[in-house]
Length: 423
Image (tube, rainbow, N blue to C red; front, side, top):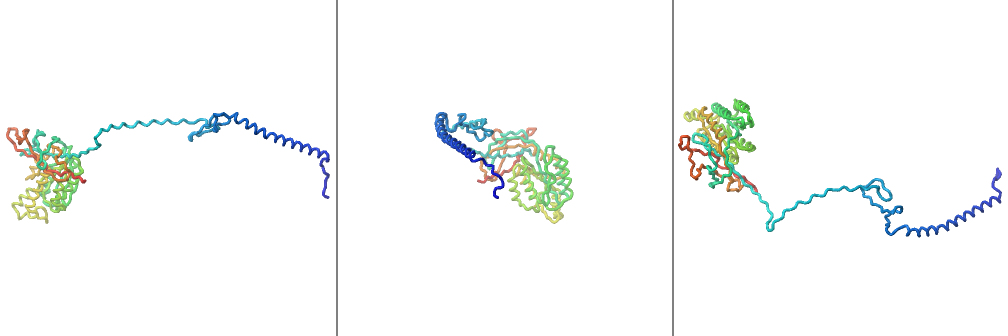
């Protein structure tokens, strides 16, 4: 029941013989293996001192005997058991330049730096005859300049005849018809004396200043600006405010500047006082003021007819003869402080000659430069006085073409304000 087929196993005798032969073979192999183990260990110990020389180190490779190379990090590339096939050469950097040789320090001499701030004062001097003619041919030795009564040493001396930079400041308000007409006549007369190299700006004032045209060399633009003055606005004439604004703007313009002030001299409603405008004029450098008075005919009529000229300057603003005299003195003071001259023409025919004199004054003058003996930068106002002297030191005698002595007039600014530094 348990066996459904016949067994195919070998006969007993033949199967027993086969097991005996295989066991003998296994015993022989084990014996040979055990005998070979001591021989292999002994052979390895005997070969080690023979193949390794004293010069070899542990870092040498067993197959070639060459020392193994340590590859730098930037080598990269394929390698073998010795190292990389090729090691890149290091870039040769340029040697730094040798340091500069320091100068030898002198013994017993300390190190120090010297800084000198020497101020320079420029004074424009106009020398004319009694008739207003320019006196040419003067030399540096003919001038003596005094600062606060102390003689100064003139370092530079030139005769200037150059283009001008000027502002034409015109009073144009609703005051009196004669004033406006004469102001325009004087302005046109000044424009006629200009040359193509001159720079001129035009402004007018009533209650406040108004710029008609900025600095230009185009005479047509100047005439066009004056043509706009046809219908006045306010009746106030704020002279101090307008002059202050003009001087403040000229502070930003380099070089020598001039202000041609066409005015009656009357200030009616300015916020600034006379003291403040005087201080502004003192603190302003390189500006010369030439005031031109207008309205002489009306003033003369009012002096002879006081009852009919109570409001000669404008409606609602009574102006007396004393106000005009005060205005004249102010204009003379402004001119004297800056080295200019004030003019008071009586009629229109004087205007061409008058502005011809101004043009001659501006274009022909002597410029004196000196370093003041008082080098303190204390912001003080210093008085100046310029005199003409002969080579021997006495007063200079000027003669006309006929050989007669001629009185001369020396016009320069009264003083200047020194720079002020804060320690």
